[in-house]
Image (cartoon, rainbow, N blue to C red):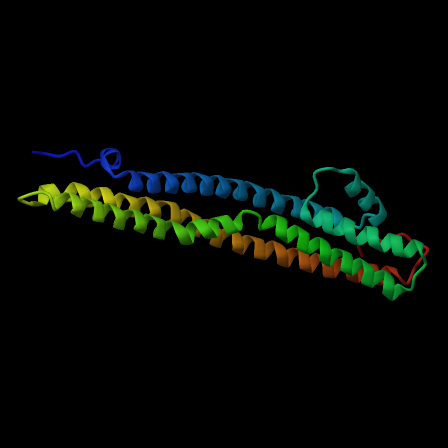
Length: 230
């Protein structure tokens, strides 16, 4: 007799433990795909916003005016928030008439703190992808081992064992491993891709922070003039 060995049929006839494992893996896969699409969209939006802000920043615009326009917007990019935090601290210390070194150090500390907050936000849900990528194969393997044990226990009650009686139980168990890999592979690829993209954004933000610090240092020699990106 021909047996229906489609995945749906195998899952429906699997033990409840294997079914529970498969359901959990499918939920993890759906959640990881949601994170992947959200990260792709979010990081692309951040890169576009950074390119636009850098063009505006290096256009020679008055930094006070740029700070006012940045502070008035609700939806800003990490680079804009980094600039705003440094500029805000610099202006506060300048109003207190502290020495030039204290003003520059205060702005740099504010930007370092802002940089860490931005990187923490960019790395949000990245750990989830890493967890799914590392745990899913083992969860699937657990389902497979349990399914094989369940299949052999059932075969022990048979007088005659053939390939036709063994195949369905083994196939049901192996589905769990296949779905575990199905959940793990996209998560691992997404994790590596986003970790690399976030590293590039971090380098871009650190470079901007250093360049902005140099601009502030040059403008400290002229306290009466408004700083500009030159």
